Amino acid sequence: MSQKLVNLNPDLSRLRAEGLDISIGKSKHLFVRGVPYVNAAKEIKRGTIASVLDLAGETTIPPESHVIFFVGDPPCDEQGSTLPGVSPNSNQALGEGLTPNHQISRKPTIGATPGKYADYYEKIKTYIAIICSPAQAIDNTVTAYTHPVVVPDEEDDSVFKYLDTAATKSGIVAANHKLEGLKIAIVGVGAVGGYVLDFVAKTPVAEIHLFDSDFFLNHNAFRSPGAASLDDLSKKQMKVHYLEGTYSRMRKGIIPHDCIVDEHTIELLKDKSFVFVCIDKGTGKRLIVERLEEWGIPFIDVGMGIQLGENHTLGGIVTVWTCPLN
View 1: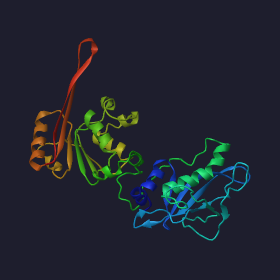
View 2: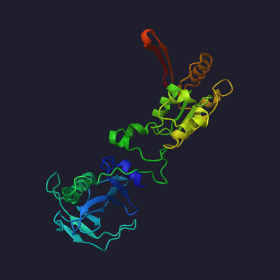
View 3: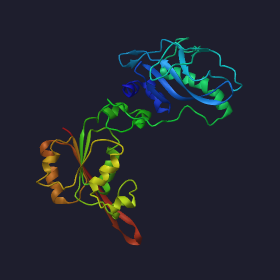
View 4: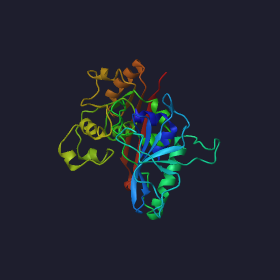
């Protein structure tokens, strides 16, 4: 639920995209961990900000309260004096095993609604600046923006094994949703197909089916994305199994088929949402194209030929043929 709420709300997702260690507890408090501050001994410590999270369903609304709670020593300025607005608090358990030691009250004085924060992005950013500034005055390298590795919730149905914060940072989360649930096939995972996989694997499609009957050998390591190890090559794996092992570190739904697509296996493509045809053998390609057209499955057929010319120059031809959805 925590990650789902963050992803659904732009104010929360902006905080995560900028690198704050945020989470949402079962008590519906917003937590920001790893916040640097100065204590009374003028030491730099790290504490946790907590804020009540006001929601309408699963959508955040402007915070009703301008107050935050703080787990840690009383935040101080660089001289060790308690910051204005800090007061003791020991009566409100927050869940997650956290009980705040203090609360901090700083009302915004500008904006459309003076005294209230417009959203949680504004509220948290304001308190981060207030609490962290003294620590940064002592050591300008400390920061609350730690960019933690974030994993999906257990009940989350994400295909990724850690959260795609790149989509959030780029503002393409809504566009990515269009790809969820799709079943993609890549026929031929050599040079071109390997790079197609590298891009497709980083989208939220449900399944990526790999078709190839060749082994992953030395020459493949110099034609494929990434950097294969000597141990990878020594195993003499099928290409599809090597790529499955590599990309399964990042996501679920990589399904290898160590076979060619011919009249015996063509039916494996029938339920796919989209097919990338990355082979150079004409006979097999014709069968695939004819069946995909018959079944109304969109596909891209891409091929590349490179030759060495005079004076050791390279030349070649790239062909791309597409069949879109009706």
